[in-house]
Image 1 (cartoon, one colour):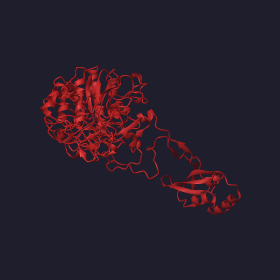
Image 2: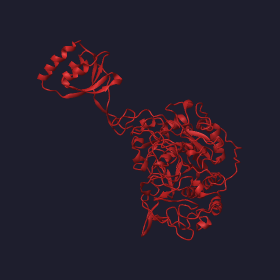
Image 3: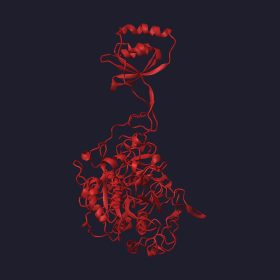
Image 4: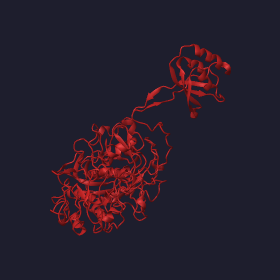
Length: 622
């Protein structure tokens, strides 16, 4: 898991540091009253007699601390005074009790009683922005103390002019992602893009929106910026600021509220990004892929790695999650194992400011010794923006930090940090190539002395060093290039979409079209996959899929996919009826400060697995 559990909260109780939401707690106030006159232990009898003749006073909850060797005299005195002994507090050599208000003085004078303190209730207010931003894993800590993003901001480099494409579960316009021109929506390729019935299809209510909760979290890390923020407040801990606050997010939604998607949808999203990178005022220079599959076919053949490579060779820096746990194989996840791309592993600060003790958590994939992560970035307990009411937000309320934020761990978060860093470097050096960005990031990364030497790649992201380093002019990667002529099914690995026992498998895309790499691969390289009239000509739309239309029929369709039927099975729900997809998860990310399971998204879902045996009681154990 990469983190140790710190014990399990007893049923029905919450511990300090693990609460939120305005919960009322009882706290121990400092003792100020010492034992007064020494009385004989036998005084309990007369006191009891006096208490029985007086009118009962209002009972008060108190904390009684005992002196060494007191035995049970304090407890007997409480009973004699008309009170009730309640809960032992061994950690302070005391106990709680309910005692009549007018008997407190008498109790304080009993031999063996060190102090009697009223147990006054106080309200622990929900963490405000400053408190959240000062937490371990906050973007304030990450940008100011770990990665050095603020060293770029000091020079006026905030990612301005750079668009970062985010292929994910969509983005919701919450504070931090709703200023003018902060988020641009590309096509919605998810199952929520539209609603279809007998009368036809129309845009769905969740079109482009993040009903799952992952994409909003990533967008906040990459380029979030509070609505009221200005360059003067970027260094203020009360202000939420992502890595590249001046950059813009281009959101391409591929997953629905249950996280369901297929590799073919992701490939279609990459194809759209490549074809539209410079159209309609866009300047897409970075592509964030916070996901992976466990497909292991050679990267030179795999369609997903090929699509990512096409983006890379088109001038887009492609940043990919290395994976969490290797999904049962020592290889990095697909497409991170493609050597051209930037494969990012996660790092854990262990709650300290100094990176000298940072480690690579056990959930971050190490690779096979030939293809390993290129570098690491903060990935444990990262605090970013939440999507209220989304699947993750509703399922894991304990992962919330304050009203606006959500805490998660995984190489997805680390990838988003590096995508933001790449946007800063591109903004600083507009003519820089993807190969040069990769060389610059790796060449200036800081080695972590106690972290796994293989899993950390070249070390921790260090923008302080990168800012002032010369652009590596001779940086040109010469790996054998992918062809994309391999199997779409092999790209899925073990992650096949399933409904009611029917699997989407074989060489068919999510629309039921025959997957023909001999047609698709050259169209992807030429940037014509979204034009041309039909899939036979290499098109994604062709009048059948234009980003929101799912009707597919015709000779090419072995499987009918129209939002109604698939392989002859009834399509019961746009959200897959809440099914779990073989227990797999999206990138293994955690939404409680731990990890989901240290595994990766494989096309089945991003959720649905338990917490890898780690107890979760609704409290944040960080």
